[in-house]
Image (cartoon, rainbow, N blue to C red; front, top):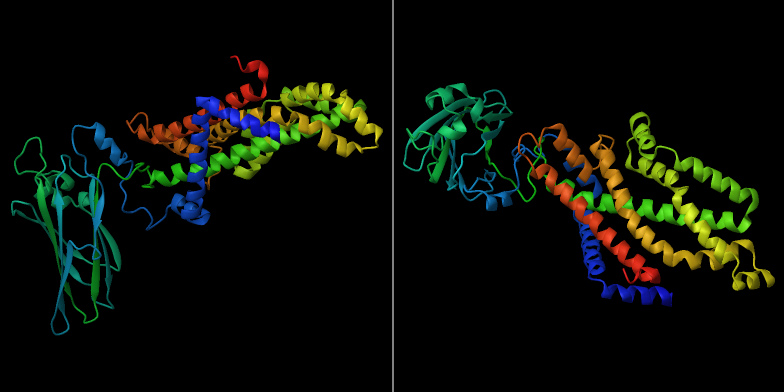
Amino acid sequence: MNALKNAFREIKRYPSALFGLVIIILLLITGVIVVIKIPYQEAIRLWRGGEGVWYQNPKTAPPAWTNWFTKDDLPPSYFLNLDDERVTKEVEAFDGTGDINYVMTFDYNYDAFPRELALFLTSDFEEKNPFVDIYWYQPDGTEIRVASVGLQKSQTFFFSQDTKLRRRLGDVAPEIGLFAIPDSDPPQVMKGTYEMRLEGISFEESSDYAAEFVIYGQVHGVAGTDHLRRDLSVALLWGIPIALVFGLIAAVGTSILTMIIAAVGVWYGGWVDELIQRITEVNLVLPFLSILVMVGTFYSKSLWVILGVTVLLSIFGGGIKTYRANFMQIKESMYIEAAQAYGAKDIRIIFLYLIPRIVPLLIPGLVSSIPSYVFLEATLAVLGLGDPVLPTWGKIINDAQMNGALYNGMYYWIIQPAVLLMFTGLAFAVLGFSLDRIFNPRLRGL
């Protein structure tokens, strides 16, 4: 233990090790916070999406920070409902009927037009449904009649799908015509304060309706959205604990089991050692990735199944040969003979005398192997063999690839998970290399 403590003190001498350690600590802290703030079931619900989860988000919108690198100030997405102070509701009741009006006021000072406008309407009635007239007022006072709608229990009015509104705007898309300076060619944004007025009539005393107006912008959030309107920040954040858990379990399980098997083979020798060596040699020529692809294609894409198969195939790897060579030298040591002389059992000698001598060699290799397993999980996901339930970095890249992100200029969709994979791999790689120099004196001069 003192040797390990001294070794970890040596880390301070290597800036690259400190760099990797800081990144790993940040990833671990972030992963823990994510799991606490977004529990597993909530993360699955958000990733699967469904009705009412991401309806306020635009499709394939880049992150809001991309505005820093563009000449124009692109609009974000936002919505207006009764919880917003910019929305007022006016109700005036008559004999059996009533006027229910909404006034929605908002400022629009961006250099580009929104992608889409949508009005989500829900109404409460028994037999006679309410009727609503929708009016649009530009900053210069120009009034535009948008539509007249007979309300259902629940419905969505997409402005761009109204052909009558498009004709009234001079055959211009509503998301452009409603915000454009009249007669501007090409259309230019009229900046200022806009107002949308909903004038509703109810025909029953208890009848009412609610309205929510959504302006779908060209940028959204800190990570952007995908083709299903999902906020990519959920998958980017949840990808951290998934990648770390997969990498750590695979690396720790493989390294420890490999070391134990090698120690058992060396100590007992004979047919036990021969059997372990033959299994290792056969396993070394097996196509590792191809087997995982077959498992994911024909059996299960579950992350835990893939993890189990990965550990099983990795146990009898090249590490068996390396550990065997070290254990052969340790087996001939004087203190091993002394342990045998006072009657120590085989299990005690293996776990208390042989294995502890190899631990300093185990740690650097274990740390260095974590990135390979992280990239393995991401690779399978990119190939479409990732867990369909869990949000992971590889799944983001796979979705981007399947939806033509590169061809359509949606580079953020691929760059963000790729950068996280790169920094995670780099952090463990530089830390593992530094630990290797610390534990192996022959490498300290390199």
